[in-house]
Image (tube, rainbow, N blue to C red; front, top):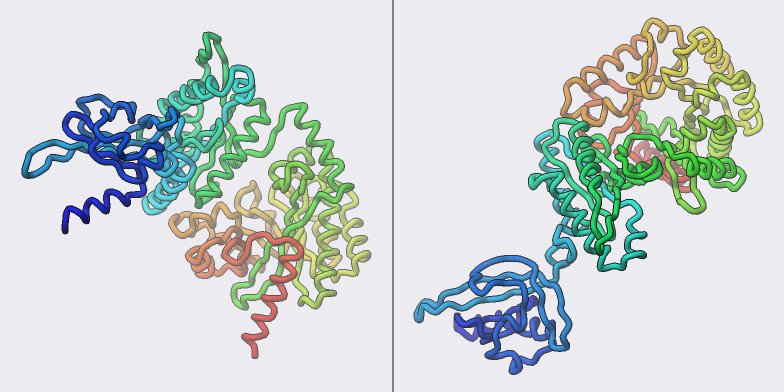
Length: 540
């Protein structure tokens, strides 16, 4: 190839490039650099490189680091710089090639020089794949500085940037070089902790970061105390995808803030808001039914031997006017504590039956709707009367209603529980025990409970394709249930591998993302119609 060809490549590079001679004088520059700097080529030929680029030593021969590019109009712009020294074969003379590109393009945050959101997402995906292959765990820490806006507003953005840099250094020192650290934007940082033994290791790192912020910062000669709130999510327990792990850690961080800041929140921890915030949430919750903010989503349960949808589970969501869609884990504890769970549970039961009746009016073949009962509902003396009244009002066939209870609900007073369950069964409805295997049931009493179905908790299913203990437990629960003439539903089936294993263990039905995520009323109606047409097509 000719020298002219290499010269054309140099000129057409999309990143800024300069060549200097052994004395550091500019002998060439490409179009990308000229556009960046605003100079004409004749204006910079023969001038020393230190008039154009700051951030290097004269004896440097090779590096990658942050540099400052001085533009013709006097502006100074941060760039990620690459320096390489090249020796010409014939003359043995040294030349230096300077390459400059925007930090964002490199995947680096301009302020901290840490990975930005884009690069972080790539690295986290790689870490998840590695953890999956090694059957290990990793944790995501989502970190947000408490009351940072006050610092920015009081001392200015330059001081805010200074504090962010110091905060980044403290976080980096706390987690070590073996773990990944990134700035998501603003005052939000995120870490990926690898090679953990268990979730407790992740909590230890988080506490180390919290402690690192106990030392005050110095801003313009003023001592500033600033803390941080941290949320933790752990692979594979809290998600196995980038977005889900980050979202769950983010949500846990906000719960930590609600708990008073300067704390660590875990993805699985239910909301436990502080007094004032809790009062506001409770007041909003009291108006949720009145303001039509509660909504039901539905997740199908599929019979494995016929591949038919036999039931859909009704799942409550709160569509808050300001906060958007709120999951039950964030408001059910408050509803239970305040007694709001009773009217809320009545609303769910009635609405689920009304929806089912409406679907039949739209020509959808009848399937059962499964509704979770709270402990307060189950122990209330008018439960059977309410259920009977709702069935009469909605004209729903009782066999199309299934009530889900948990082991713990029936073990407080076994004799009373058996009486209530028998009365419900006399109405013609189905009864299932949800989250089976996680409570404190007595197998001796299980044979006395007039139930139809056991639902194997998702904690046994999520690792069933790589944990023989989970396989054994699922097999044991299924065999026990079948000996008692009970159906078995496996919850949380998300992959084809998990589906194949629960089929091998003779589970009767499955529920999970493999078939469908929870769907809105409009979505489930279309889903049921589509499923029905596909089934009819197979029969033709």
